[in-house]
Image (cartoon, one colour):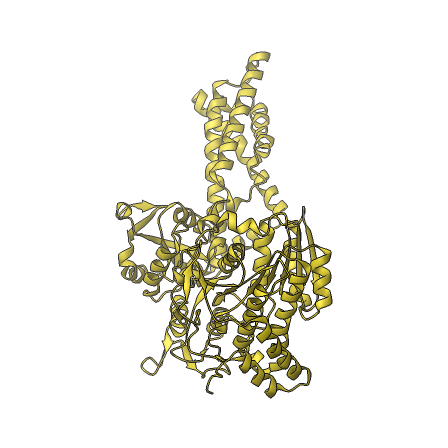
Length: 633
C-alpha cells in the first residue's frame, strides 16, 4: 500500500473513532450491550467446547440454552454498574464488581441445575464460562478505553510532556491520572529521596531531583509539576527555586489539606502562587485568643467587602459569633461577601448594612441596637495614588471615619475596638499613610479617655497577597499579554503576608489588647519587587528581554515612583518594641497625643475639609502628623 493510501486509511480510522467519541452516551451504551449480546454467547460456546473437547459435541449440546444463559450475564453486569460507567474512566473497581456479579450468576445457574436436575449443559462448563467472560469483559473494556483515549489525543493538541517533582502517593496518582488525560503526558519523576532513585513509579523512572535541569533537557520536558503537597513553605520555596532554573513553566498541586478529601487528579494542577515562593511558615492561631472576642458575641466589621475586611469576616464566622454585622459603602463588595458567607450563617444573625463609617447615626444605631461587643475597623481608602489625587475624600474617610467609629464604640459600650492600620503610617510620604497614622493617634487618644469601658487597639502590617491593587495579579496579566512588566523602581522592596494569616493575627492581637497598644505583625523578610517579577517570568517558562538578551520574551520597564510612593516601607516609628504572647505579634510604644491636644488639631482639619481647601487640609494634616514628609517627585 502506498504512503498516500496508508495516510488516507489512518485518517479514515481517526475520523471514525472521533465520530464514535462524539456519539450520545445512550447510543454508546446500546452499542456496548449489543456487542456483549453477540460475544457472550461465543464465550459460553467456547466454554462448552473446552469442557467437551470437540466442536461437534458443543454444537449438539443445547445451543438455545447456551445463548439464554449467556444473555443472563447482561442484566447481571448492568446491576454491577458496567453499563453506567464511562468507558474512558473505567477502573479496576468496576471490573471487580463485574467479576463478583458473574460469579453470583454462575452459582445461581449451577444451583438451579442441581435443584431441577437439569442436564442440558455440562455444569462444570459454567465455571469455565466465568473465567472466559471475565477475560472478555476485562480485555474488551480496556481495549475500548485505549482506543477512545487514543482518538481523543490524536484529535486534540499535542500532549504536554510533563516531569513530576515528587514520586510519593500524590505524584503517583497524578501520573496515573495523566494516562487518560488529553492534555498531559507524564514522562518521568524526580525526587529528593535517594531510596527511590532508579526505581519505577507508575511505570516511570524516578531520577534525582539534584539533576532536575539535565533530566528536563534529556526528556524534552514541556512542563514541571511539583507534587509534594506535604512540603512546608520553606521546602516548597527551595523546590520552586530549583525548578525555576530549568527554564520550563512550573505548576503545582495544592497543599495536603486541600487534597485530603479525594484522589489527586489532573484538574488539581494549578499555577504557582506567590505563597509557594515566600517560604513563610504560617503559625496556627492560638485557639483561646482567636475566639476570645468573637464566640457567642456580636461583632461589627467596617469595610467588610474589602480585601482585609472580607477575610476578617471569613475568619470571624468560623468562630461562631452570635451576630455578625457587615458594613461597607460598596454595594457589589457587600453583596459578594454576603453571598459567600450566607450558607455558613445557619445558626447566627448575619446582617449586611450599606453605609459609610462617616454616618455616626448609623454606627450608633448598629452598635447599640445589636449590643456590639467587638468592632474591627477595616474601612479605609488604601490606594496611594488615588488618595493622593483625592485628598479631601481620603482625609474625610480615613481620619474622620476612624474618629466616628472610635467615638461611637465608646458611647455604645463596645468591649473591644480594633483599628486595622498599615506600614505606610510609619514616617509617611503620602496622604494615605498620614491619614492612617492620624487614625492611630485617634485610637490612642480614645484609649486614654476616661468614662468608657472600651479597649482600643491598633494592628499595623504591610502588603497582603491578593489584596486589591496587589502587584502579583498585575504581573501575571502583563506576562499573559506578552509584557512589558511595569515596575516603579529597580530598588523598591515590600513586605508581604497572606491575607488569611493577616486576618488571624489581627483578631488575636485585638484579643491581647489592654488599651492603646500599637501591635505590629512580623512580616518576615522584605521582597524586592523586581526579583519577584523575574521569578514569575521564569516560572512561566519565559525569559526576560534585556539589552544583553534582546530575543527574550518579557521586558521589564521601570516607570518611576508614583505620587506619594517610597522605595521601602517600615513597621516601626521608633525602637521601642516588646514581644507579646504571640510569636508573630510585637507591641510598639510610640508617640501619642493627649485628647485635649488632638481635638483642636482634628477640628482645624475638619474645617479645611468642609470648606474644600485641599492645601489647607494637607497643611493641617502635617501639623497633626509632623513626621509626614511628602515624597520628592
